[in-house]
Image (cartoon, rainbow over all chains, first blue to last red):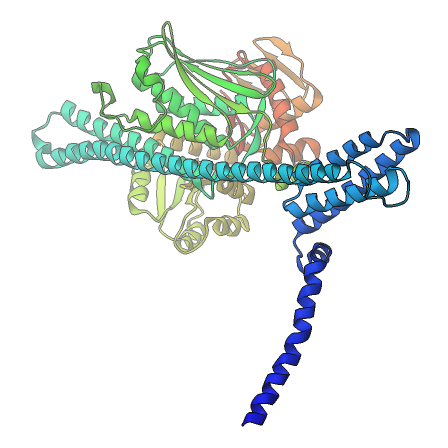
Length: 408
Length: 229
């Protein structure tokens, strides 16, 4: 038993020997093997980029320093400035301290070897040498630390912005749902009531009363339909996120004409004056959604503003964007409401006229659509009423590749 | 007594079928109904209707398939009723050979107007007599366009577009059809050049380009020229 125990111990000892040696070796050559490891074990693009960048910038700095040295052999101080610049660049653009430190060490050696007297020889006994070394060391560490901090903060900021955006979307959704259920229930109740009373007491009504009831049902049904169309347009925006709107370059005037044809079919009495510029304007958009926006704004002016003169609908454009204005000559919007008018708040209806025609939903949908297009929408009061205007950018920032294919 | 015009309504929703039937009967049309695609096909074959109103969303077969089958033996006018709001479906149906489309929900007057237009086009042969509408006269032979007696100068392509739309007035013409007609089958599939031409035409022929009365736009589908008077 003893013999086997001794044998075992001796084997163990033999095994640990080389390991210890190996550890010592790696300890000494840590800095250099780090780079070897980077190449052989880390296959991330980023690590390769950092390494290549470090080597590249150091070589470039040495080349520049060499050229400078040939022109002005006495300018050793300026040469260290070139290296310091290289260290700052490397620390700034890489993601680990070691690249900057490695460059600092290389720089010290290079300056010493190539650019200080005696040339092409190491001489570490020069006065002030430790100071140069320390200064470069600290510059690299400080720059790296500062950049990490900055990058870290930028990332944190991005994350919190994303969270805020999510929360806002959620809020919009919840508000919409609340507004929708309120606004759907009201016309449905009135339709059910009217049709039920027609069925139950149909015989006692006069022809005029019957007509009145059926007209009321028809009006409510139409209103419900427009509401549902609005809601459908929301699903078009939210399908898979706002970035994948199916945008095509459209002639803005044609979208406007199509919308006006539709609204005139809905409200034959409504009067609209249209104005378009001589210039032909196009913008990338989902035309059905933009049509919905113009419809909502015009409908709004018809129901809420009770415009006394024809509503003016005009189109204008500048270098970056096109702008559509809908100007009514009616009641106007109370100034305290102007800011929040696009926020689907199902506010307790303040005036009798707003109890049924849910104003909030239509406008908040407008805002959602325009925002998804990268445009802006606002409302302002003028002396005789209200003007809504929205802009659409002429250039599409996310142009989908398949669109580009069809164009060329 | 005149023979009544026969209209076949292929629609699976009972309520909509009955309301269309009552509207059409009141206008002295003879109405035949079918609730499924198969039934629609056999009715179409046995009755030889003058026009088909076809709902695209049928339970047993796709409306597109039905259009293709009917187009295999007849070019009687087909008006598609589409509940889908996506413009792609309308375009696809028109591409398959449907004559016109109407989107659910629609008003009675709109439905009747579409039916009249489709019937007129199927009855009247293509002629070269001038198009006349609200003071606009297009003389296809002399290649002359006048409004209220004043000549309007159009470029060659602009005239081609206007005359193509005028010969098919009342019908919606797809963007692609127009492009193919003007610039040939292998032209770029780019609407912009067509849009620019249309904008120029509008500025030339419309009394007020901001409120068109002759050429209407159907977003995502095409253009429709006002019916002749």
